[in-house]
Length: 153
Image 1: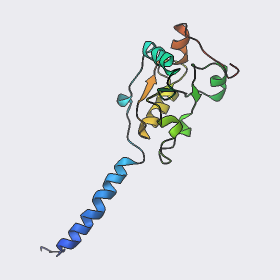
Image 2 (image 1 turned 90 degrees about the vertical axis):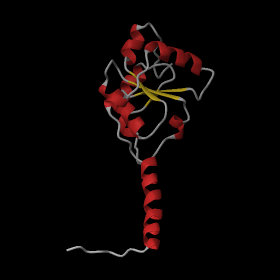
Image 3 (image 1 turned 30 degrees about the vertical axis):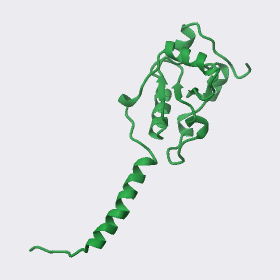
Image 4 (image 1 turned 45 degrees about the vertical axis):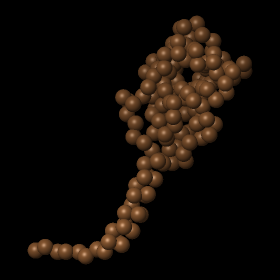
């Protein structure tokens, strides 16, 4: 048995007019699916260069330390800010204090830090641009003989 529904051309156009913008808006906001393979990394050498260049350009770089507040206070990379993955909420959208930087670099304590990867993925899923992971973390920075700062500095 074949059932035919007569939908007028006007109804089809109205349906399309509603669905197309709604579909486009859903793709522009909210959470984006991010996998481990999507993460881009930055080397110690490149990060050192970005840190040096950022002293003259406040919009160039933001370093985000994914470690605990206590670890951050005791030693962090120059100019870094503490930010835990749970503090990034894709439903609330982007924070202009973060998004107005060309390079957004997250890091943790050591190479392959799970919390640093989680922060990186969370930032990427919130659709921040220029997000990368400094995979070496504080350990690689310190091993390279580069300066670390404490909250008292």
